[in-house]
Amino acid sequence: MSPYRSKELDVTDYRAEFRPDIQAMRALAVLLVVLYHADIPGVHGGFLGVDVFFVISGFVITNVLLREKASKGTTSIPGFYARRIRRILPAATVVLIATVFATYHWLSYITGAINANDAKYVAAFVGNFRFASLGTQYFTATQPPSTLQQFWSLAVEEQFYLVWPLLFLLITLPWKKFSPVPRLITALTMVIGVSLAWCIIETQQNEVWAFFSPLTRAWELALGAMLAVVGPHLRGRAPRSGVILGAIGLVTVFLCTWFYSTSTLWPGTAVILPVLATGAIIAGGSLRGTGSFGRFATFPPVQWLGNVSYSLYLVHWPVIAIATQFAIAPLPLTSEIELVVLSVALAGVLYYAIENPIRRSRWLSNRRGVTFIIGAVLIGLSFAAIYWHLSHF
Image 1 (tube, one colour):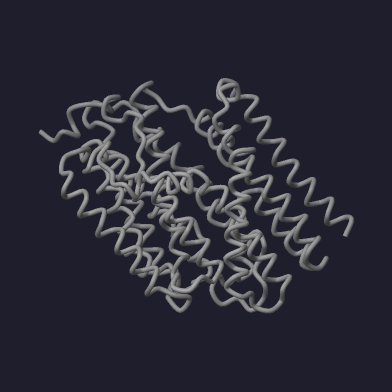
Image 2: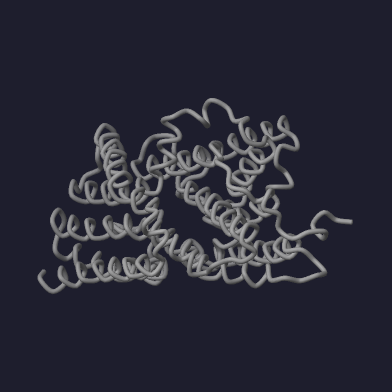
């Protein structure tokens, strides 16, 4: 009999455990994106760091859902969204408002107004549709990009998580014949197949929409979710194989970063290799088991960079974009490096002052209603700042 058919989700399987390799992958992903945007030589395909993030996010979020289901027997949808509000909104709101202000202050009023209009969609987590509808070319744009363009990937994630928790709840309802695991595997396999097929087709037809669409990116998040579901059945089974698999995945990501470039048709078929490589790194970590990760993954600066990766992803783009547009001429390498250092410093401030205290607040975690009120207030503040700038300038 298949091990998947004999039991419901086991709390001993889906238990909370810290994965230093996941933090290290976050550090790698954000570093690739930041260095790519800063035009650091050699990071030709650093944009694939976003795809690494998608796989990681699908893995981490699904692990949270699985642990709750295994320990409590159910999944709280309001609880899920309350956690997302505490995790995402505070830091995002600060960066959005600060970026609108900075764009008006350092760039022209016309540029400020254009970006303020972008901000209306970003604040509603549909910025990816806004950029796609404008025909934004991420790689070959002839006009300066929006100073809020980094929010597109956040919108894709949140759109996926509008659907996935509800689907997860439905799939894991009590059913005598099969346990939730084979049901989840079947559903995620279908999502991966359909989304990947559409990603390839849409990239050939409309590369802009393929880049920004949640439908073409869903398979990357679903792959991470699949690895979370099967993770307990891999845990510690083959440490040596896990090391080899992780090394192959890491080398593949680096090779793709070197050989891919703005001329690569993206996402299309090209995205398959780095996404599968990311999956291999995560699967390799599961095979190795806890407590068997190398010095690099557990190196404190790497772990710290993984901790601040969300804040760094948010702040780096407006810092680089505004400075580049303000200078008009291309910035020298030394200035680009200085902007990267400034971004890391600002990310640290944002993480310690806003992101981490609110995310870890026990007081808020026990007051779900207050969390939703704070979320509504934060969104309201974003729109207030946007319309104030639009009406005064």
